[in-house]
Length: 385
Ligand code: NZQ
Ligand code: ZN
Image (tube, rainbow, N blue to C red; front, side, top):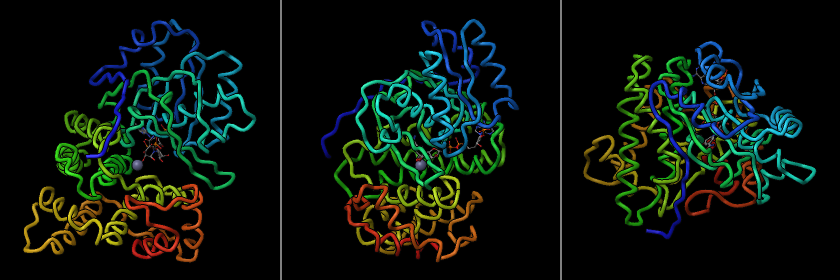
């Protein structure tokens, strides 16, 4: 096992009616920015619950943080934070709102001229504290330090990580997810599945605990995911999916083991250029990365195939191949597309992608062996087409 440090201070408040905990959680805060997305919280009653819970506070509202949060939108909230001396940000939404608020929190305290530099890795000394109410379980943003920001004016999508991004608390009420449209339920199964895959389908370093933690999440997603699509208001199913998504990217399963992330890095560029949902990009790229990296990943894929899909055959080769097929079939069974061509994107339009992926990665090659460069990305895109 590799050396590691693990620190995670997020107070998770999980369960039914937990929005009622807000007044306790915000006891010593006075000027609060309540930030949310395009309005789903007004339709499912969450907005009203929050207004009631915050009725004795000074609250500034910021609506309209879009999916794949945009730099220019977020900078408008930064102005409010500076002007009104906001001392706490309450992010209410999915990964986009939470990520957007992590950026707002840092940019409001940024002393330089161009806050986009935060995305370029400038170390940050200060940020406004934030808390979350999660409405879509998928990204794990509610319990991690990551934030992914898009800049539509330049077709960029970049991530930053800062310990100041850890939410002070995250309220996880699974019943809030009953109102998700089917497409977002599918996204909320695939994104955590791929988060686990990126930390588990690499190579063995003798870390059976982390492997089994990963397998527990994958098995639960495969069992519970289809149930959520069939019966969208089953609380227990939603609770299991929500807790899977948080655990898939809260730092635990990836400690001490190699990590891949090539699928995510290629996927982010597909979102930036073609507007696909984050998880839609993962469903097309992961099977192609697994095929392309077959030689390096074969042993792990074989183990994964046996434990997760119960595949029996007389060679690692056969089991590993079948495991990739079963992964793709699982995505398709949920209703996800698994080929780029199904999105009516032409091969020609994909040409600039490899160069952009490597540019966004700061010139570094991708994957657990760091050997996936422009040529390799281009071949992966061919396999995914
Ligand atoms: O904006 P509203 O009206 O709220 O609608 C949203 C949005 O249109 C809707 N929605 C959310 N909760 C709902 C709901 N609709 C009905 N009922 C509810 N309860 O769902 C739509 C999508 O929301 P979004 O937040 O964009 O989805 P998701 O949580 O999948 O977040 C995607 C973003 O997170 C980034 C992605 O790149 C993307 O930008 N990621 C963040 C990560 C992190 N911070 O660790 C890791 C991930 O790999 C990912 O990159
Ligand atoms: Zn993801």
